[in-house]
Image 1: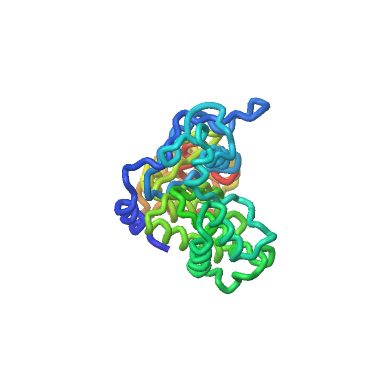
Image 2: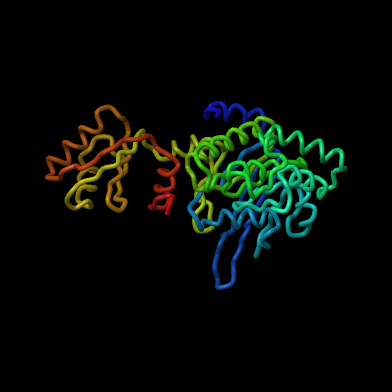
Length: 330
């Protein structure tokens, strides 16, 4: 996997100011007055890996559905590769590749045939589609199972096949909806490596995820969503900087945690913010030297017994909690 610095360097080399996706006040309201996406404004540039991060039900999948013509917007506008998705859905479909959350491979076909017939469906000549299928079988480490029924391959291999199929016709944008959901750690890392390679080649990618480490590792920029709205957009590095803390300390204790929150906020040097999250307390601290002993000492002087304490750097989940007051995985 590339480092965050590597990703930023690649982004500056590959991404451009050319807009590949633009949403203006994009809204989806389902029957029953269920507002899934609420006046979303968004721009994704050529060569960028852009992530929509948020809990289940945040509106990520509905947003991708509208951009890929599967869901009709209630109002607003969505432009993909210069084409209005509502006015010209058939044209948009020719320009995009989509990897759904669920396995939608054709189970009546082999691994190789899933690639070959996809190419033919998108207008590739027989020889061209056959050659592309063989090339992708090799690049995605599927050649050894080329003649296997798709029902007989692993979940990780099926996901790689879905990505290969979506890329076969050279789409302008690749949409990935929760691409690693349900995958084991090894398969997840393998897919991240594939995304890194595609990014280096200049492929524009929009992915949805609720895995913070996935968004942090893969994306150039991230939009954090909840209740159909975008709460913040920036690079992972800048989003984490926005927390305004060097470390996040999590404290478990006996006694009244609300009283302990106020005590730690008032008396721990460097505490910029504190909050109770269910059965623990989180403190945002400027500076890390000697922070844990200071917290324990303040708590004990106030009559509290610390049962557990840990320190970590700010994460994207920290950003989400700061914005919404709740954990990202709700």
